[in-house]
Length: 316
Ligand SMILES: NC(=O)c1ccc[n+]([C@@H]2O[C@H](COP(=O)([O-])OP(=O)(O)OC[C@H]3O[C@@H](n4cnc5c(N)ncnc54)[C@H](OP(=O)(O)O)[C@@H]3O)[C@@H](O)[C@H]2O)c1
Image (cartoon, rainbow, N blue to C red; front, side, top):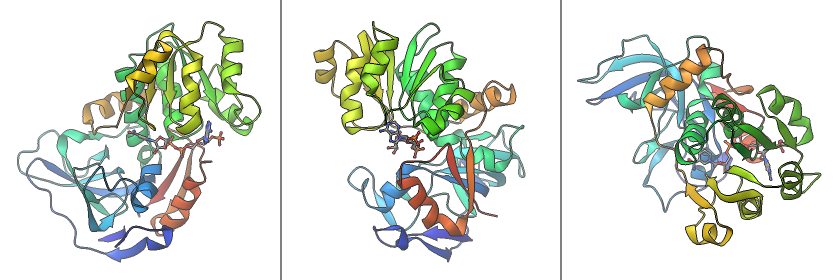
């Protein structure tokens, strides 16, 4: 099968198009014929070796954790799927090697779901990783509820595009940070207030709108953005991070709760997201589509930190 691989950690020039044997589904696994995959920051972080202390990596290594495509074959014991069905999945495995920048991937059936019937493969490919992360962070760890206010950093990015809509779906008031050129986009997804973090200090801007502070911050940007985020929370509020790892000591200093989320594969939650999309309550992030062969360009584009929505790769 056609696949993009790296043989060692390094720059985007390490990404090579190659031909590898098609994987076979083991017991309990689905073999997916991938139509489209998408680029996530974790893909270039893996390529650069930034995750090597946290997870075992094996070469040749196929990057990519998102897949939208059709069921090509089923391993022993798999029920609930049929060959040819349109599915999507977040394909993270215990070892980093057999990813989704390829024509085929195998994945545990419990992580796979029928994709939204109303979407094309290219639209669906941008959803699993960011959809699950924002679901698990906001609805899971933070327990966001109707009537609460949430600050979502990087509202125009992949995580932000899904987070805004999930937060509005549960009835929260949504404040986002985004460059002014993305304010129409984040408002079209449902954001109530948009702060241009390049023009104004987001702490002052949030406090001006909500003097008592917000209930939840979704920290999708680390460093000083994460550190400053405590200042916009109400006492007893919740900071949920997917970048730096906040400690409860930090939280105690500010009188807030903290959580760190590392997204887990979950077919059930992908089914719930698909139902929201097919009901017209959530729509897919904006997408820019490139060919699989342009994986290096796609990762370089994402690495600039300016992606609106998602960059999707067409596997063909
Ligand atoms: N722990 C986990 O399980 C998990 C899962 C997914 C992602 N992540 C991490 O979460 C981060 C975001 O992921 P993503 O997929 O959303 O990335 P992304 O789509 O590449 O994010 C791009 C967006 O970031 C915005 N941005 C950049 N710097 C910003 C700043 N200082 N303040 C506010 N917005 C800023 C840009 O907004 P403008 O163009 O409007 O300026 C752009 O729209 C990455 O570090 C990723 O590795 C972690």
